[in-house]
Length: 131
Ligand SMILES: [Zn+2]
Image 1: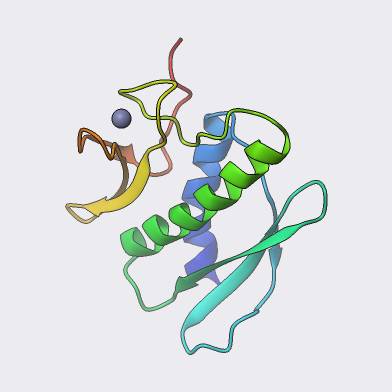
Image 2: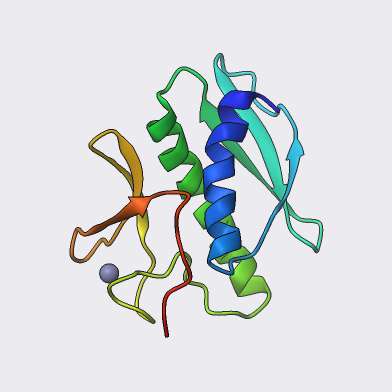
């Protein structure tokens, strides 16, 4: 897999692991001919796959936020499939309510609360919410 994609994906996979989210089977697959677009596939245990991609020329924070958005989509579908609450990542400020959204703030990829506008630590440093 292209390092421009794998380094962005690594941060998001850390977040999935550290917050108890589902973990995709990531496989190298170039499924786009679009110039500069680097791609892979995310597979679930039942064998269904979803594409993930990044634009190699974008700065790392933008690539992380874009990949986080796509992995989030995958994670929500996977949680749904295994009948777990389909919220990932769960909002730090509003537990049992809504997911965070990936964004770039001050040159860093962060998770933000769409309701309050709060930004979490950088993507890749997520922790499971305290109960
Ligand atoms: Zn919130």
